[in-house]
Length: 226
Image (cartoon, rainbow, N blue to C red):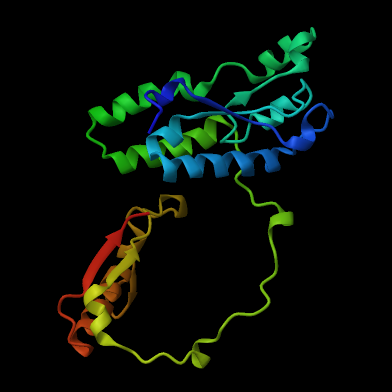
């Protein structure tokens, strides 16, 4: 509440164990902490402040490690200490370069707002565009994947059906894509499956059957395009 202008605030993160040691966090470690900081700002302040906040990494940054660190979506720059006094400091500047996000995003935002796109659509596109320009690696590394010990089986779940809950339920179905990559000329949901019914017909009939069986005429039904 004491901050009047968040655009003048810059946050820098440096691991305690990296101070003066020459050790540097891995890009994944730094990204995890930066993402947590941005998530906290979203909760404690606002989504806009969190999205616009410049969060810098400052742990033993060198020309050798900065190029990979800056590819992470939540690392916006570097707080360079001792390395800034060395001739190789310019190599760090050259490796990082200008922020493509800050240079190009305003044009995209202006175009989307002019076309009447809502805030949710703009925010979603901005997030994906940030990943693109930051060259973020969206693959989940093997080190982050853990085997599942066990899963409950449907037959063993003892839950008594309660049709009354359908009044608070929305049936959301993914409406497939156009299928042009599969050589199709129309939406996959319009392909005939059986008995003259398309995928879309079967989905609609499924919902209609639930309304009849459970006397839930108010059951909401929505289609979501992929």
